[in-house]
Image (cartoon, rainbow, N blue to C red; front, side):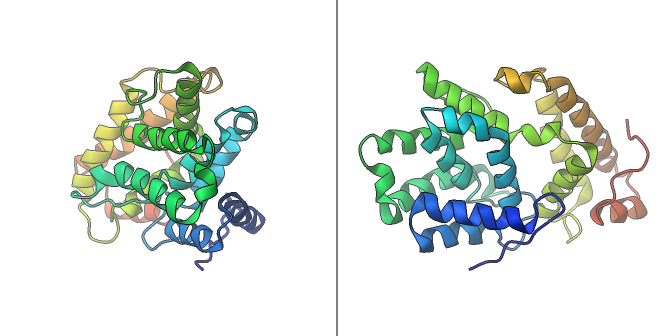
Length: 257
């Protein structure tokens, strides 16, 4: 079984609780170990167990009260189960993750399909597919189910509301997963990253639920800070010392706006 490492943001006790939670929910040791192994895989820096931990923390009160708690739980475990940054595979991450959800429930966790369980699995798949664009365009029309999708999407983007140190750790994780520091073009990645950040900035309101809408200004400010950094990178204006410091875990000391 892959061993998840404790971090400054997720202590060892949190890692163990998450692993235990996975095993209890799926009632299948081999399946829970496979899930944990995927999120501890080589090349993962942000899409890890730590990300799942933060999702559970962000939505914990809602998940306990939601009629779609099972779907929310499934979506957390499987939404990034397949994560590739290659140009060919990246657009298929969500659909492959949704397929993995159905396949693993059928093969290793059939109790989740009993009764009306299939509806929960299908709703979880909708949540996963909606993370492709982080919109409700593929959400079901029924209000309670649509609200559950909105809750999940907001939790997935809640990292954008993080304090600066955690925000830069997240951003660095995305860059490392794309191969920055291991031969990937900084200018090319900077261009793609800037495009993604500006797309979110252009929405105005990033979140769908009132709790997170109240934090929209904070998220937009964080996006602007990240975009300024990657705008410089996309123009070839990021020097080696600054890049090395960034990759070593040191956020820019001076404002980059």
